[in-house]
Length: 453
View (cartoon, rainbow, N blue to C red):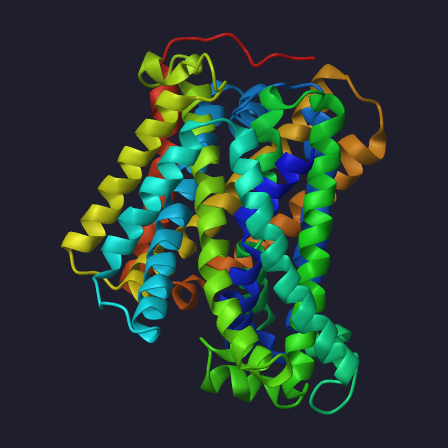
């Protein structure tokens, strides 16, 4: 379970959320109320996770959302969901490659190194991810475990120091009041908050590799969502207090890229701030490896069900990993990054921003499909009679996801940098991907249903 939780929290990239998304939540969203946005997002995802975890006890599949939707709503909706999942992980991984490469480039130049193009760093990171992703989950988990402990340690150290020293103007709980949450644009804050959780659902992807999936997957899901939610809420509160509840919005607007690192410099010192900047790169690398594993396992599950080249459904005899699907994932990532590089795109303003927005909408729609599939599955099969687990929590989770999805789409142009044309194109890609999956299901072979335990 520890290895799976490491992979899931690594995919969420805590330092990336606290150092990258949080200042935007504060500056463009609801200011000091940002910590509550994280708690609301965590609450909705925990409600969703109740039914998700309950159904995981009856499915032992590497396809996660794909297997859930297919089992609950049928093969057409299932393959549409698989398309959305692959789109989500491919997009967010590509965006993180852009952000990681840009961050690494700035660090190298800052310390007197050569000023190389961003895509040089992106492809170097890809090579390391490819080697680790070719191996099994345990090797990846060990690498991520070390990086994650140091990363979270830096966040905890900053939070503890700010809270111990009383912040800029003393400790207050303004961030957790309704008035603070509804101040400004809470929809924008929720949009960034939910995007910061992408990757939590990956617990079920590793069902076939867990020793006891019936117990491991539910526990790992709750633990991952709870840990991420508490970490984000406390650390964002500490950043708010570092500047003061009344002044943090102005500070975030003035310095959206360096707000968290400025707080570290004020309360931990120059060396600690520099260390956090370096850890941001390792945080992004950990997320890249986690999403690489997720994409390769989706490809493996689809190939095994007759969708895609049969070779992708092979397992390495020694490593026990879907190695050919991992190689295919590396190739597709290289193709996407190469396209942006040849087009001369900015790695942050275009690659990261556009792909993150695309992934957020696709993931929300995917979770909505899964939540409905959980309700239908238990109503049809009667395998679990617990009303809270199979009806009440999934229905509440579905309602929360619908509200957040509406808010995200309403603010989508802001999320992707303010271009109406780009937002229309990206939303059209999401719709077309789902439609393509549904269409392919009509002509695909009729594989066996996912295993029911």
